[in-house]
Image (cartoon, rainbow, N blue to C red):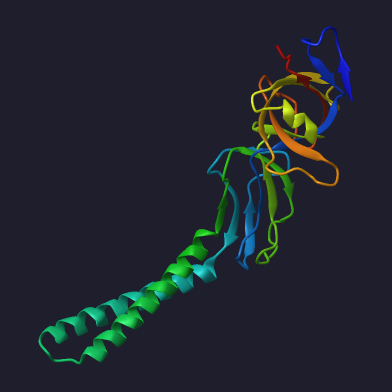
Length: 235
């Protein structure tokens, strides 16, 4: 597999290896709510910024339940404070105080759970990116755990290469190389970012991750590429 060029001190060029472009930031978004979708603010392919609202649910039911839970929490807090005051005057038993405290803690926990559900009534973007796939539709009911959309950051890319494990003798993080992207037929500079922690014992290969060191404009996740890695010269 090695092609010797010139003297023994010259570089050895390996046959090109195949690779795949992937996004560093990618997420499949789902919800635990069973609620009607009121609004979807982005369509497939459109961009968004971190924090932008991507989808809104009709959460009237959850908000009403939260109001009731908070009222119950407040009621139990008053009962607890009253029992503590009576206990100081020895006008109530310790067991009554403990029971009121337990009721308050239970109501507080229920209100906290409902508040977390209400917080999911609007789905916000966790990073800058684009809508790779939209599975949800306005006015449909969401199903707990069912994916609604897939998000991807097309500006933060890396590449995955599978190389012979014997190349670990000379492949190290920081090694520079070049890649040709199939779909765009463009040449890009790249650098080895990291190496996988294990070797495939069957194929005797190892995964390495590279990053684009120059412009990656026009490159999208899922594109294929060929990488030419050169063994550093030994002196």
